[in-house]
Image 1 (tube, rainbow, N blue to C red):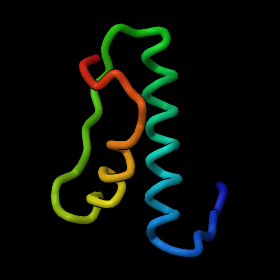
Image 2 (image 1 turned 135 degrees about the horizontal axis):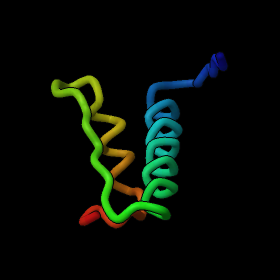
Image 3 (image 1 turned 45 degrees about the vertical axis):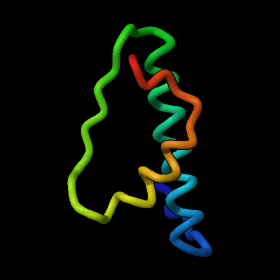
Image 4 (image 1 turned 90 degrees about the vertical axis):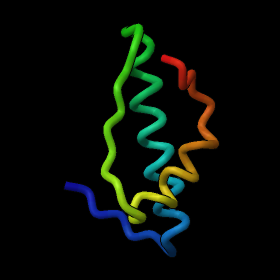
Length: 60
């Protein structure tokens, strides 16, 4: 297990979004489609904001 200490919530959201985008991008290298299920509510909002900046083919 890795424990990462972030200086603030913004850096946490950015790093998590980058990790998610990388995982999706890697998956799409070998698959035609990907599904991404997330919880509702306001908690993941900052992560979604950061993830929107990712250069992903969202149509896939």
